[in-house]
Length: 534
Image 1: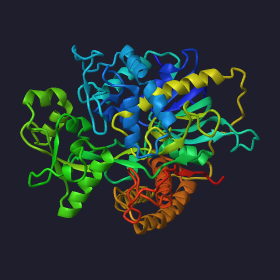
Image 2: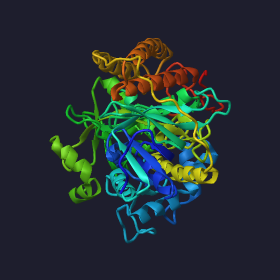
Image 3: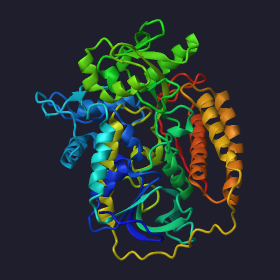
Image 4: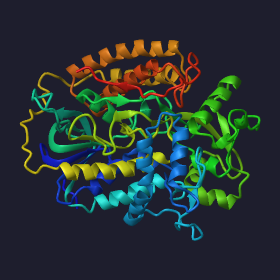
C-alpha cells in the first residue's frame, strides 16, 4: 500500500494532479522510484471523472490513422502541429490496449472488429470512440486509482495544493532546472518543501476562469500559472472550448450532456421545437464543438432565451437507458425524463486548448519540468479540440514523458539546498471575503468579455480590469498566509491575464477564437506564443 505523507521529503518524481495524465504517468514510472502524487482533493477529484463520451482511437478495420489525423487537422482549423497529431494518433491503439490491460471495463460489442462498442462524435468521420457506457472517465479513473493504491513506492499527498515550482534560477544558480515544489498541506496549513529530480504537471485546464463551466471545482489553471511564473512559455491560450450542451437547471452544477448524445442522433431544438443547426453547418448536430456552441449562442441571443433543447426522445427507451444511464438518471433527478422530453442545455467553458508549451515527451522549457494533459500545449488540438482526443492525449504523452524521464534519470544528481517556505512575515487573514469577491468578479467579466464571441472593446475592458485585480491579489498574497482558495484565485487571475493577452494579439477569427472585429481567418495560421518577462 502507498506510504503516508510526511514533510520535507525527497522523491525521484513529483506528480501534481491525479487525472488520467497524472495517474498514467505514475503507473509508467519504474517501481524502484520514490514517487509523490499530489491531489488538491482526494485522488478521484480530477476532471477525468467527469469525462462521459470516451477515448478516440483507431480500432476498426474501416478506420485508419490517416482518417483520424485528417479529422483532427480539420477540427483544429489549420493550427494543429501535424507532427503532434500523427504522434498521438499513431500511439492511440497501443494506449487503449494498455487501458484494457489495466482492467478498464469498456462497453463490449461481439460483432465489432476490436470487440468493443465504438460510437461517433462531432467532427469524426468514423466510429472510433471507445467508451464505458456514458461514464468513461470514471471507469478509467477508478481503474487506475485501484492500481495506484497497490504501489508501495507511491506516496499519496491528498488535500495538498502546489504553491510554486522551485527552480535553480530562483536560487541564483547558473544552470536552470526544476528542483521540486512548495506544497501546501490544506489540513495543517504548513507549506512543505518537496525535493524532486522530476516534476510532472498534470493539473488540468482553466475552465473555472469562466462563470459557467462543465468542469469540477479545482480547474483553476494551477499548472499553467506555476509554469509561467517559473519561466515557461505558454501557447494558444485564447482557444477556450465551450461545450455546446451542459444541463441548464438551477440545481444542476456542472453537469455535461455528452457529445455522444448528438452522435447517436440527438437533435438540437429551439424553444418552439424547430431544428436550427442546418442553418449553420451541413453536418448539423455533428459539426465540431466551436460551430455548435456559436450556433447555440447566436440563437439564444437572437431570441433572448436562456437555453435551447437537446432531444434524444425519438430513440427507443431501452437504447437511451443503456447508452446513457448516467445522463438518464441525473436528468431524472431533476424531473427531466430524457426518454420522453428534450433536455434544456446551454454552452459552458469546457476545455483549455492552449497551455504550457511542450514537446512529444512533455518537456517544458525548464529541464526536469514536464506538463501533460490539459495544462500542456502539445499542438494536437490547434484552434479547436476534436471530441475525445483529450483523454487520448493524456495517455500518449504520459507514457512518452515517463520514457524520457527514465532515459535521463541521474542517480548521482545531488540535491541542492532549498530554503524552506518562509511565512514569518505574514499573518492569518480576517478578510477572506476579498477572495470570494475577486473570484466572482473575474469569472463574470471573463464570461461577458472573453467568451464565445469577442470584440476588441470587450477585450480591452477585460485587460484593464485584470490588471487591477492582479495588483489587489498580489498585495493580499504578500501579506497573508496562503490557503487553497487564495492559491487558486492567484492562479486563476494569472491564467485569465494570459487568455486576454493572447486573444488581443490574434487579429483574426479561427476555431474557438471568434471576434466580430476580425471575422475572417488570416491566410497563414500561426501559434500565439507568450514568453514570461523574467
